[in-house]
Structures are given as C-alpha cells and as structure tokens.
Image 1 (cartoon, rainbow, N blue to C red):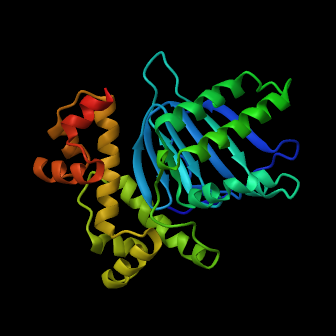
Image 2: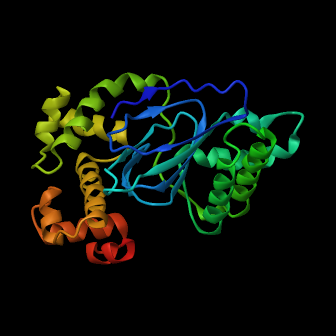
Length: 285
C-alpha cells in the first residue's frame, strides 16, 4: 500500500494533541516526520504499521516512529455508540535540546519506535491516564499542565521497556526505495479488495505487470514478507474483527475471509495470534 507523505505543523506547541471520533473508513497509508502516539479509546478494525497487519480493538496503544508508514482502518461503531481515538504527534528533536540534557535518556526509546511499539501492562495504564488528563486541558487554557502530562507520558514509557513490544519487521524505507511504492500500491489494494477470493501469485504478478519470479522478489523486498504470508496476515486480521464483532460460526468466518477449509483457518489463525479462533473470541468478548 503506497504511503503518502503528510506534513504536520504545530508551531505554537511542542506537540500536536488530537482527539476525534474514529469513523468507519479505509484510512490512507501515510507517514510524516513526527513520531505518533495513538490510543484507540474505543474502536475496532485493522491497523497497518510498516510490514505488519494486525487487528486492533478497544484500548489499543501504539507508538509509531518518524516516517514509518501506518494507518488504521476502522469498522462501523455499533448503533447508539461512537468510537474515539487520541493522537499525539511530535518531532524527535524535542528530546535533543542542549538546554535540557535530561531528555537524552529517551533517545533509545525513540530509536525503538522506528519499528512501532505496542504498549501494554502497567505502562499502558500510566500513559492512558495522562492522555485522559490531557483531555481536560485541550481548550488551551492551561498549556503548561498539558505539557507536564506530555513529559509524564514519556517518563512512563522509559521505565518498563518490556511493556513496549516491537510491531513492524523493518525500519522506515528510505527515499530511494519510495519509487517502487506505486507498483506495490496496486498489488496491496488488489489483495484488500479480493482477500475473500482465491489469490494466486501469478494473478498478483499480472497486477504488478511483472513475471511471477520477478514478482516474488519484488514483493518480499517491498513488504518484508512473501505474498502468501501477507495474504494470510490480511485474512487473519479480518477474521479477528469478525470474531470480535459478530456471533457468526467460526466456519462461516473462515470462508468469508478466504480460507478454503476450517483446518487451514485454524492453523493460520493460531500461527498469527497464538490463540485458536474460539479462544480468541472468548478472550475478546
């Protein structure tokens, strides 16, 4: 999926704070110079960070590095409710101010964010507590109080490294590699439009206008995965959403997500989530 370059501006603040309803939509893959902390307060769907494709649900909290491609594709909120997301965006040079040398202690954290970090455990609780506090200062009446919350967030992130789990398999692509994104974009969009169908490598190669042998090398270089592994990731992520949001039989979900048999689905889903589909549904409902 081709990532567009976004330009984020916040000249009057060290960071940009946003809280907004998470609409049902296919978000566009994008990147920007800022790091981004995203908290899905309530919501569900599929998120893409670098080469990773995963389902997300309520309370998903992720730190995305600068220029790491990402997007969240949200499903529709249940009738009578609404999904919300809170986002912080900031430049990493904030943590390299000569006048504040204490901030240098956070440099290893920022380097780890280049692969994206899923935040869990006690760190998740500490960070979301500060994000909730920031909501009360969002009117700009007390910017110093909001700044203190911002610093507290990064203090919490630095205390327990084991609570920060790497997401993507590789760092952001460089400028030279971006030229290939137009071709890979066509293939990824085709996969997402037809994941429920039989997807053959030969057909994907035709979409990319290259030979099957050249396509295998090209796809692995651009995504860090084989074509088959990527398709299975997408199908399992879609299955996660259906298991959370519906009471459909597992066999029906398997078929709707493009798996030819229940045994194939169970095997791939276990590999993707370390849980059986039944256990996943029990743990998330």
